[in-house]
Image (cartoon, rainbow, N blue to C red; front, side, top):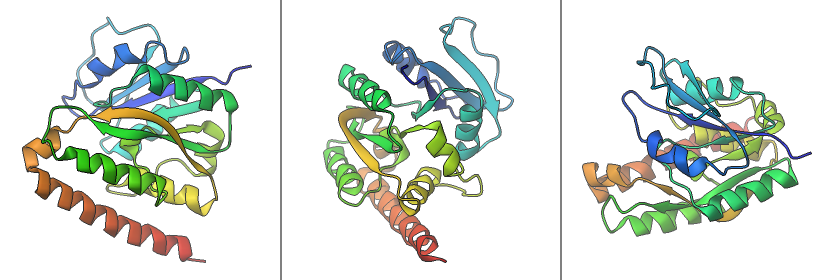
Length: 223
C-alpha cells in the first residue's frame, strides 16, 4: 500500500503566499494539506479545498511545523514554505521517493522566482553546493521525510530562535539518516533580496549559516 502523505505549510502573520501554492499541490499524491497559521489569526475563507486542514500554533516556525505534523496521522511529511512553488517534475520526484519509503530525508534543488535581483542565480548555485556537497539542505528546499524518522529525530527543536531546519538536518547527520537529493526543482521567492539588497542579504545569510553550522557541529561532537 502506498504510504500516506501530508504537506505542512507554515504561514506568518498576514501571509497569503500559500494561496498561489495550493493549486500547484492538487496532484501531490492525493496528499492531505495542513496549513498552519499563527494563533489568533482571522478565520480563513470556507472556500479552501476539502483536503486542506487549518490549524493554529504559537509564534515560531518550529512550533508551527511541529503543530502541523501533529495535526495529521500521515505516514510521510513534506514541509513546504508558503512562498514555495512546485512543478510537475517536483511532484513526480516526490511520488517516487514516498513510494520507495526509505528511512531518509529528501530535499529538492532550490530555484528562485523572477521577483528579485538578477544575481540570485549565484544563490541558487550556493544553495545546491551547500546541500549536495556539504550535506546541509535547508527548509526552503522542501524537506520530505517519513513520520517515523521525524519522530526519532524529536521533530523541530522549539528552543531554537531560528534555524530550526538547520538543527533538524544536523540531528539527522548525527543519527546517520541519509539526506537524499531528489534532483527536481522547488522554487522560492527572491523578494527578500530585492528588499534588503542582494549583497547585504546574501552576506547575512552566509554569516548566519556559518554561525549555526559551527554551533550544531559542536553539538555533534559532544558525547
